[in-house]
Length: 198
Picture 1 (cartoon, rainbow, N blue to C red):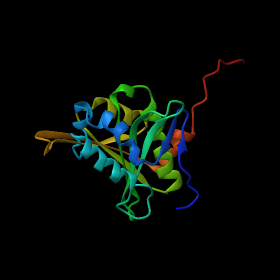
Picture 2 (picture 1 turned 60 degrees about the horizontal axis):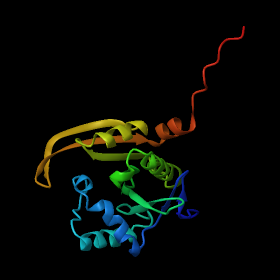
Picture 3 (picture 1 turned 60 degrees about the vertical axis):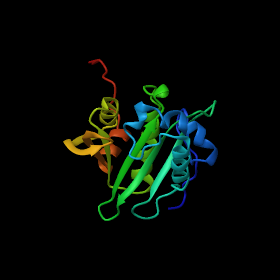
Picture 4 (picture 1 turned 90 degrees about the vertical axis):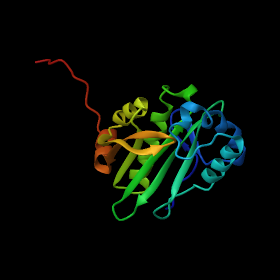
C-alpha cells in the first residue's frame, strides 16, 4: 500500500519504526515480570531483548497475510519509548487483523495505549481495508480487558484453562470489532443534551 508515512502522530505520541538503538529502552519494560507474563516470547535477558527488537525492526509494513507492522510508542517532547503496538494481518480472504501491544507499567493508565491503539485501528480499517480486528488477552489482565471495551470491542470468547502457558493454565479472552462498528464508534458522536426552549 502507498501513501502511508511514518511516524504516525497522535496527540501525545509518535508511532515509529524500531531502531537497533531502542534495545535498552525496550529492555526497561520487556524484562519486567509484570510484562513478561503477557508476552508470547520470553525476553529475560538483554540478548533476548536485542533479538526481539531485531524482529520488530523488520516488521515495517503489511503486504501479504502473515505480515506484521510493529511501531514504537514514543512520547513527543522527551522521546521516551513507552511500549509498542503491532497490527498482524492474519487472513486476507476474511479480512482479519490482530492487534498486539505492550506498555511499560510506569506509563500505564495515562491514556497512551488508548491513543496508540486508536491510531492502529484507524490504520487497519481506513488504510489497509481490514474487515475485522481482534485482540487476545490474558483473562487475568483486567486493565487490557477494560481497554478493549473502552475502544468499543466486543468480548466474543472466554477460553478457560485452554492451554499451558509459561507453566500455568491460560485464561484467554477474545475481543473483536468490525470495520463498520469502528466507523460508527469513532466518527459519530452524540450531541449534548439541550434544554427545551419552547
